[in-house]
Image (cartoon, rainbow, N blue to C red; front, top):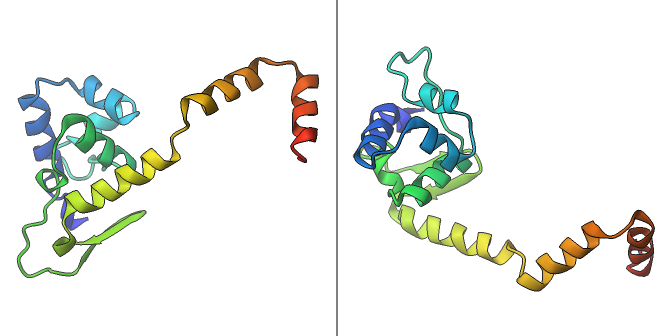
Length: 138
């Protein structure tokens, strides 16, 4: 994980600059505080690394460019950077990849009307749910 070699130090600097506790970062990323402690561990044998989801949550919620957390300045490596579930070339620009991801997330979010229908469906009786599903052909 060459692109995360200094992640622990960079995360700590960003966290401290933003006056955030490890608990704050854990809440932003949807993990427990022990995971954040592992991300900042100085001993590489004890160090853990965030998944793509946690990394994106951290970048978005702290308004930190991904470039500030990852080791991307290896001038000899112009190949594609690959993270599990996310791949892009350095030339493509991380902000463009994040913008595309944000658009996809927005597309998948429920409208207010859909949220209300789902809320009502969940509140109704089991019998009513079965009837609704029959009407829908499921």
